[in-house]
Amino acid sequence: MYSVLFAQYSIFTQEARIPRLTIPYFDSSSVVIFSSIFLPQAPGDWLQGPYLYVLYDSYGMTKYEIELLFVTGFASSLIFGTFIASAADKYGRRSSCLLYAILYTAACVTKHFANFWILVAGRIFGGIATSIMCSAFESWLVYEHNKHGFNPNLLKTVLSNAALGNSIVAIISGLIAQYSADAFGYVSPFDISLAVLVTMMICVITCWSENYGCEKAILSLQFMDACSVMRNDLRVVCLGLIQSLFEATVYLFVLQWTPTLSDASSDIIPHGYIFASFMVSIMIGSMIFKLLSKYQRPESFMRFVLAVSVLCLATPIIWPDNEMVIYAGFIFFEICVGIFWPAIGFMRGIYIAEATRSTVMNYCRVPLNAIVIIILLQNLSRQTIFQCCMMFVMLATTIQQCLYRTRTDAEKVRPELSVTNVTITKEKSPLSPSANLSCGLSPSSTSIAATPSSGICESGGIVCAPIDGRNAFTSKHAANHIGTN
Image 1 (cartoon, one colour):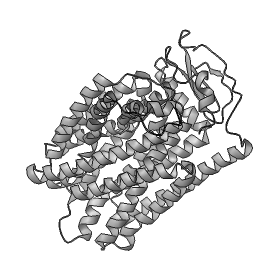
Image 2: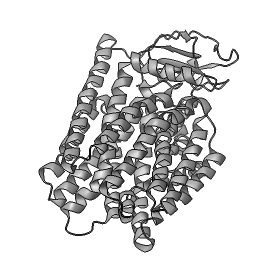
Image 3: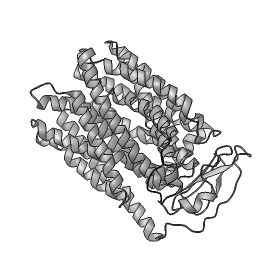
Image 4: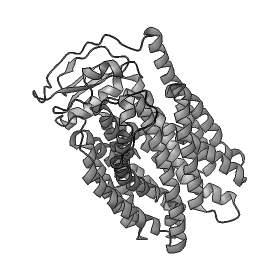
């Protein structure tokens, strides 16, 4: 969904540079870029959601075989995806997004075969593609945000609007999947997905510029730098754990909502329509996020959002045979998911350094995939799985409280998060003496020192990466950017 960035930044350029302007500026080129990038990317993933489980079931796969197929996807994301997707920082986020489309297209082709091992290959491709999708697009977004010197507060608007637009596309995708499956069979949504993924590749090739975390960094050092970030920054660790626990719950929910509602209902459930209603809920959640973020930091209100999620996940445990109560609980859970996506994206944009963003984000997915794999391999009952989900989200709520306290304690020590005197030490990159250093600043930062091993300059929350003459965030913009978060 993060490919909406290019349009968002084109559309809101005037608003970003002139904060008092309340009416966004639109022009024809903005509309063209928005339509050509965002619209093809999102359906490629969403069209496959409603009928993946049903397709496997229609091929005569047992419940255990279906769970093994899903385990294969998560294992692929854990083993291969972590390293392939992390390479986006060095080899380019645009190139990684193209690789995502190629792998996902190959996964769609395998859905035409009722052979278990061919479907396993498709899940391997899909697992790698998912890791790329969950990091490369957002990394590309945040880089472009910094490169153009936009107001940091605009990032919340972009992420919220991206989630909103993504939900609209997902709703339409669910309806299209329902109609196509009714008319042509369960595999037809995957054929439509294949077509839009090819369209997405064409649009990215023609409309996107390439960007990097640290193009000239040694890949092994980049992995070490990312590990160092996670060891030394409690906020990043908290974010990673919250993401892993909540997203693991979402993945398990995706696998369980179909059989849960089917067992509670005496009739065949309309998968596409239910999926579309879930996407409406996510859209509502993204709008609620936009409203909440005007009054509170995400670190604060996400504590309550996660707590509500726990209650929603209790409905299939307390009322296993009441279809409407379960459905209502799932709807409210999806609203919480709609708040979670832009909130976690915004917090990642604040706390995770640009130079190792994709790598750190993929490290955060390691426990996520491990959790899902372990749960699915146990062949647990549905109620036990939902109990585990409740436990994961309760733990995420506790960690969110720790993150909130960490931020609050920092503000007590330094109530003036707006830093007026910023010392920036100009250093040449050890990797490329001619490269300029571009800096992303966080409120807790006051100075910059060079880290010779990787060409990354950092101190506190300041991170500088060599990007060959293109200053994403220079001292020229420091006064505007510090103190707005």
